[in-house]
Image 1: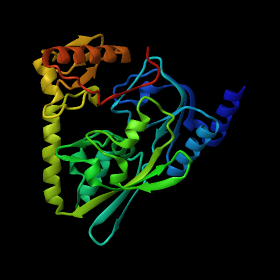
Image 2: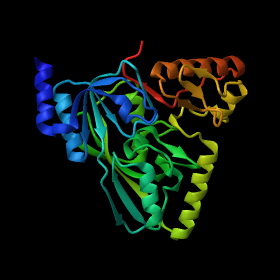
Image 3: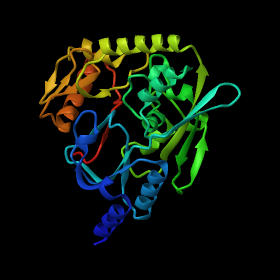
Image 4: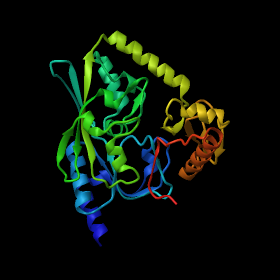
Length: 312
């Protein structure tokens, strides 16, 4: 059978890094999600390109998974191939006006911010504590504490649909609030073809002590305002001029539960999951919150978390 031949090809190329019928829950921050037909872990950009190339040439639907935050994978799992991106290479150089950091798309964004701080390089402090990867940040224009990816980015290298790697500027990316042209193209599907390979960020030299103070303040604020435990991050985007968490709180939904999913009593825009929770519990809770906020305030909340996999 064709699928067996394809699996054999992946096993030949990636050995134990390839798994069939692998639970995706093991690789998401919420600990939710059914099995993927196939899952392969890549650790370098050339491996990422090789896997995407194999998948496209065999017409296999694929999804690139970074840290597994900001996604809700269905209990039914994911058809096709999940590519677990662990390409984490990073380098620094001077360009005359400052320092540029080039990071591969599987690198952890918060870890990079800490690394920059220790080197006396400012510009990514806003991202400390964010669990996502560079690739996810580039696609979703991740941001916090007055900064975002669009404001820090210098260039991004993308594997295009014709399997050629090309460089794009922030202006090319069509950035908006927690959005980009790339995210809109990917929305609801894993086979759109364009994959982030690496990104360059602008950095400025600064005293390590000053950067450490800023990072400490951000981490303390996150600790006070965000709940511990398993979650996907912020569930809904902030509507213009307001905060999703405030609206959910004012609608009386803090502590509201469906099965093992709960609107956090600490921050209403975070849903936390307990042992035994299902992705369907979270989806139903999202629907309850959306309708309650709409009925109370007339505001249609837009999910920040993306639902992927097979849903009814």
